[in-house]
Length: 253
Image 1 (cartoon, rainbow, N blue to C red):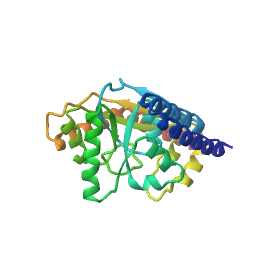
Image 2: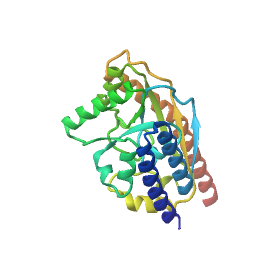
Image 3: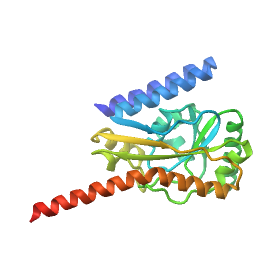
């Protein structure tokens, strides 16, 4: 069964991270994490396509947020650290995997936790890391993002690194099962996803934004760029839906 193979993959990942951490080999740890993400996508039957050039060097990557699968998508392409809501740390197996992979956590709605997260992100960026944040503050059904919050973008200003917009979308027969929002719980969603038809994930990377403006201005520009990266996808889906509706109308007559 697919779900059994996925759970075994998680357990092997926890064991590998623990073993590598004891050796203190950061490059090996990063490579292992990236390969783990790729294998996880394969087990779920999710294909990934990339549009645009991946960033090089330290930067703050900002993306729309549709699902926890987003982490597998981005993590399979880049050696990055993620900022995640604190609840993820308590998820079965995933919480320990996330912590072992260097994930930064924040308690949503807690100002002091947000301040600490801002400092942690800035420190990671200044150490040369690439950090991913989802400035919507929650996952949505998408694909177009809701308002990007500017608070965490201040970390890029402090570290004097660029902000890189990234746009995620899911396609194929199983695309409706990809999003993780609302009242979904992780275990149920993972089980449904393991049984889903084919899904193709699209990762589009925009041009880096230099942090020469206020964080609020950068946030608006980043959201505009993400929307622009998603526009061809949305237009194509609308065209297909219209064509299908037209075909059904003709058939009904």
